[in-house]
Image 1: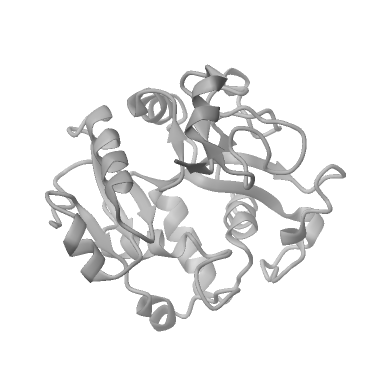
Image 2: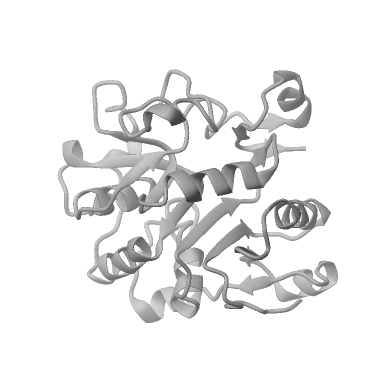
Length: 265
């Protein structure tokens, strides 16, 4: 394991996982091979035991996030662990230690992309460089999604339910300014499920949000269903909560340059 952050790169890709195995290492190596190391660093954002880490990792950049920082700062979690609703806390821990990047990509371990990662990352960073938060299924409270439970459960965002904005964030990108604001906002005691909190607080404080696919009002015209295909229902399509995708299903889809989640071998 090594830590060689801040080599002058302006962007970072953080692969988030709570376990280490060959699949995780291979995904890390695939992403690192695909993207330009002149412009990007790739780091495993790890939430697990150091013993497991040492037995699997060699010549890999890893940030072992520290749960104690949550209590020290005073963030409020909606559960006893970061699952559900606080999966962005490890990213905030990294940002507070290394706040020197323009963009912070966050990729969960069970995301699969049917293309070269550079085509997605470079396209978004070039053509959506003015966007502060880039994700999937970003949409306003409306008649089609009002039965989604996280609008209401543990929502202390400071905004009425019908003023909230949701997103689905297994893969997303934050600007530096967005992370600065989210940190300050949560230090004030506001909390909610991250799929409500992040998008709501940023939207109502002047930050720019959009999807890199799908077809909501937050999707730019030339990105409609570009990197994920949206289907009817809440958080549904090639990026969805459940059921899981298996490799054979993704292969048989014959879809190129499309994100799938959740992926299980």
